[in-house]
Length: 311
Image 1 (cartoon, rainbow, N blue to C red):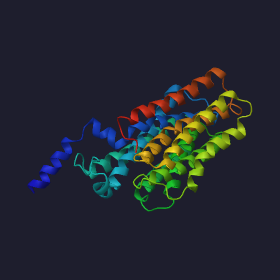
Image 2 (image 1 turned 45 degrees about the horizontal axis):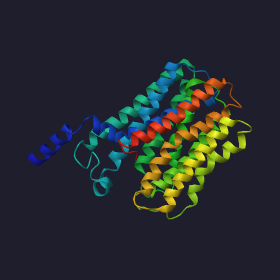
Image 3 (image 1 turned 90 degrees about the vertical axis):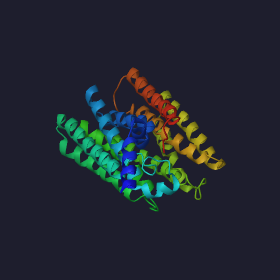
Image 4 (image 1 turned 180 degrees about the vertical axis):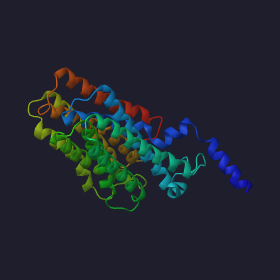
């Protein structure tokens, strides 16, 4: 009884700001923000700055809530492989993390519903957000030993696109769904790599081909857009760097490749935004601003990953 009381007290005393950040893997949040921004741009709708911020907040809550649940569901295996994580190290209790995680998913759905009510598209947006939440929970419950877990992870990011687009318009542009598919493919390659993180090697390499999806799509649709080609080249160089780490398979190379590919999600968003300029009307100044934002988010993610683990 005394030991249990002591452990619980230690857990509650350990719930601090740093623990909250660690549980949420918040270093990757800039990639969620560029997903949201790209979805709104590709949708073809005009959204107020306030609604963009609200959707970014909603998707941030969905992401952080999902990361919390990941730790809660993985607490037993983390006790063996990552004892320094907050739950195994008794900084927090699993029940507290479960409550926080599901609460954040609920708040995300409420925020999406509020924004969507302003565009008279509440029901489709809410259904998409609930599908996003279900995908997040489904991945966390069943990703160990699950051959389709990379698809489930990719589906989570794809549904960010669909949800945000439906929140701002009743008739999103078809390229929103193309962008969601491209992101799905990239995340399949990324998540497959992440699943090898503990092994230090990649046993079967063919799923890595999915990482080329944004490059192939960009090359197909870029035409003579110099900005689009610049985004494609920068992203291609970054993916090549990550592949070099994967094939080299030195100590720490796979984890480094994983966090680097996560940061690259913002570069993929840059390709999608740049190539959308041929289909969605916005000024050259706005295009440059949007691409600078995705590049800044990419750099910010890499910087934050130095202080807070991205995996």
